[in-house]
Length: 90
Image 1 (cartoon, rainbow, N blue to C red):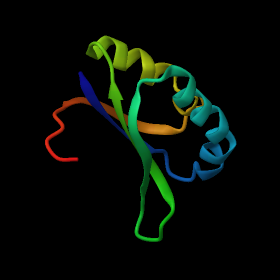
Image 2 (image 1 turned 135 degrees about the vertical axis):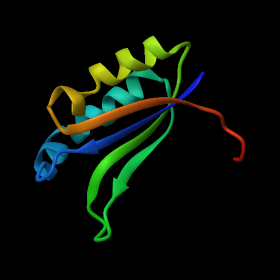
Image 3 (image 1 turned 180 degrees about the vertical axis):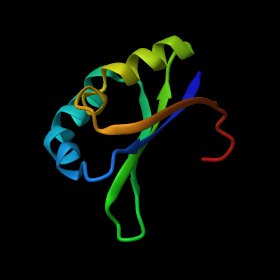
């Protein structure tokens, strides 16, 4: 099952993102369930959130992955949405 995780950063939390980036990327690597990922950008090119496509067994597994993401644990996100996603192109 593919799940799109869409997370919006809290305002003025760029340093939190930068401080936890290495741990976040290591978590992606070690868990092995991320099909695609990248930051959301504002009009100035600054990182303001994340889009992560998870390939997991069920929504509960996706929710557990999101809860344990170092970015989430560091309090970076203002809002997180997980929604089932169907890949059609690419």
